[in-house]
Image 1: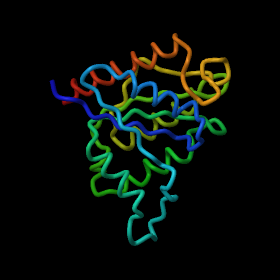
Image 2: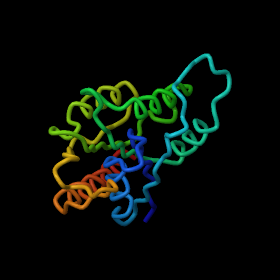
Image 3: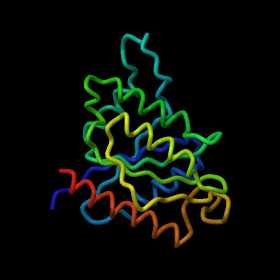
Length: 181
């Protein structure tokens, strides 16, 4: 069985990010046949078309995107929308000729945040994904309240119900990726 390469992209740069905790859990409990690598967005500068050469961090991100058949995005919610680090990374990638790094790829999203658990941010991200021609999995949706005891002090996912949701999402992403091939 061929392994599906999934690139995890976290919109939060914080060390104890619960969104990174979601990705770490997904990575550690990915179903057979799925390998999840997590991108590091911390050094990617804001997109600026005046830059004549792509920064090294951007080139590393592009290489990770090239090797991925699917994306798993952990989407924090900042001011009712997606985090700028996530949007910025997608903006950089979308500027490659013919959107070659993103178009046609399977994608899934999840998020941890306040009361509604990033629902508003994920809906904004879905709109961006339409333009990028990413094929986002419709269900299951994973909206986690980061402040209701589901995460430990280091941002690790500890709630069994949420853990099951993340595993179900990654399994659905695997099936979706295979279906789109």
